[in-house]
Length: 505
Image 1 (cartoon, rainbow, N blue to C red):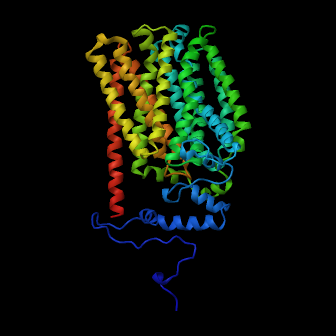
Image 2 (cartoon, rainbow, N blue to C red):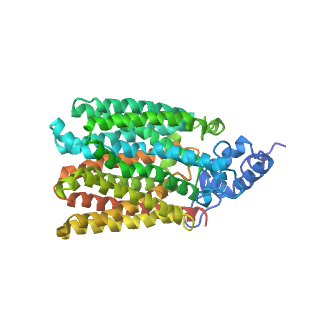
Image 3 (tube, rainbow, N blue to C red):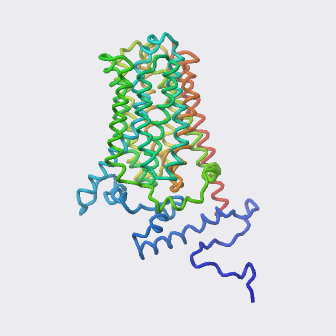
């Protein structure tokens, strides 16, 4: 007798879904995705059995490291397993009994990824002290000079949307090598630009290629870590990239004493060549998106990835709120040279020292977040940073608008609190955004980065449009961005929790 649809026996390897039932609160049946999430404990047991039977099995490694469902997420195997063998979850110190090469390999990989991630602060910050020189050299306005920064932001957004999905499909290292080579050519075009218009176009190309390098480095971090491990690893990387955030304006100011602004872009050409060597010597040996993992995506279309990301409320909140925060910070950075050197009459060296202090506090905030990750979830750390950002921005606006007699210190004090909270928020934000998306880490990172650049491109010119003769417009933009972002996070995360509770009463 032929079995009916309900009488068919499931395949032994099929995932068993719990029986659908009506939710009394919402009056609807759970969707397939919700039932799939509810069955996570069964999949976790199956992954454990597979690992016990054959720990080197590519299928088991992919299932444990995919991270699309936290219940089955775990450390990957293969060439990147050294990251977990060296005690990353314990704060980065290799455990007793482990050999020295594991710790050295971890350090080399962290330095390589840190130098790769530092490409965007170098691209953005190195030439900031030359804004006044650019204005006089080309005989243009401050708004046109700021367009060179805006063009780079737009290029970064588009570059990330291209590089992220490509790295999910073909691996991380090959697109990375191409992006670094193209970055060298774009920097060369910036150094040789004869007009401000051509410089803006070259900066657009430079932004595209530098964004490809940055987004792939973030995807590599997600490939090898998840949860608090990812947050700790991101904080460690900030120690390397933060050196360039701290030193880029100071280096640019010092280089301007012996060369003009074109020499700064020649310096970026040399840095790009250094990255070519690093990618060839280090990262080519550590493909974190191996063929066995990419094979799971052969039937996945790009629009399916974007549809899955757009359907997640928490990811939408992180993309929108994170973009607002980044845009507010970039609005300050775009006007910082005019404010410190024009309004507060600091020398280029004094401006570089102040800007370097911002970088030190960002690094400090990231390391505080790594410490807090041992006791708190990344989401709690994110909201702690948001509270600091909103409070510092409101205090900054009140200081410059109501107490202008405080001068530089009234502007600088709250600003230091803002950048510290920004450093605390960044690793937690990327961790929360990428944790559920292991197999599409490049695409998710590209969407997150593209949102950041889009908001930066919109908000950065506003400070120059409203005027840089006083810090009030810049402070107002920062307040609006921070408070709106906090609202978006609060609403988005609350709705995500309500939906989860309804799906699992």
